[in-house]
Length: 63
Image (tube, rainbow, N blue to C red):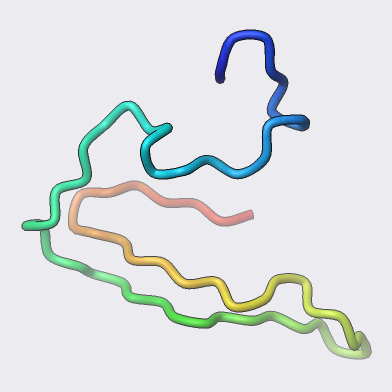
């Protein structure tokens, strides 16, 4: 977290905000593109157009 900012007021992190290096040489084990979830009976998506890659050895969670 940046000095003096709460997570609620901060907004999304840019890749340069992370304190680690992404290793492009690691194998991609999940490649998700344009994932959208609309719950039954709803018209507004819970999330829309999520794209991500998870590489070998990474730990990932989605709530």
